[in-house]
Image (cartoon, rainbow, N blue to C red):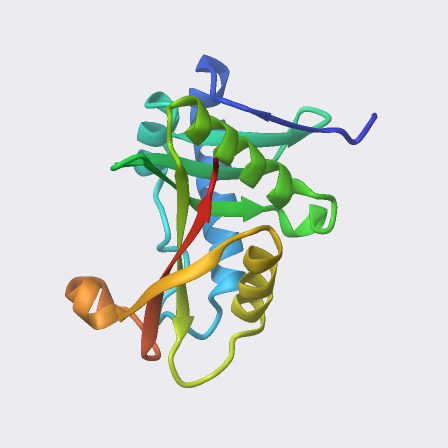
Amino acid sequence: MNNEIVCRFPTDHDLTEDRVHGLSDLINAVYDDAEAGMWKRQGIRTSPDEVKQLLMEKRLILAEIDGVMVGSVKVELMGGRIGEFGMLVSDVNHRGKGIGSALVKAAEQRAKRIDCETMQLELLTPRRWNHPSKEFLKKWYRKIGYEPQSAESFEKLDPDKFAELATECDFTVWHKRLV
């Protein structure tokens, strides 16, 4: 065991029912923890069907340590030479090992390879109170070169999902120049 973080694109091996459900469970568990108190229900960030689709389309980068999946990040091309990463998760049992940093770096490298000049992320935060994990993420994103660009109330952006929120939230778009 060398505890090296390996970031890679999915293979057919990752499309097994066990792997898809395991990754879906990991994503939901991390989001349930990171957004505790923000939603009325838990376990709703993604589904096995969505994860399988993202894996098949190679829109997820996976992180492993010694062959065990410990995280993932979704990478999208937004148009206008903007790439976006989202659904960034790191297994809570492996936090502090650099998994998030490795995944963001892999996502940025992917975006550069497809000629993106800017990388974007979106962060949902409570409007009237400070959520510890969201405050951590704001500091961390700034530390790795991201800056907030715009903020919008979540109810304006996604009226259907707004009803699922347990508290009023804002949606902030962050950018980092890649060139």
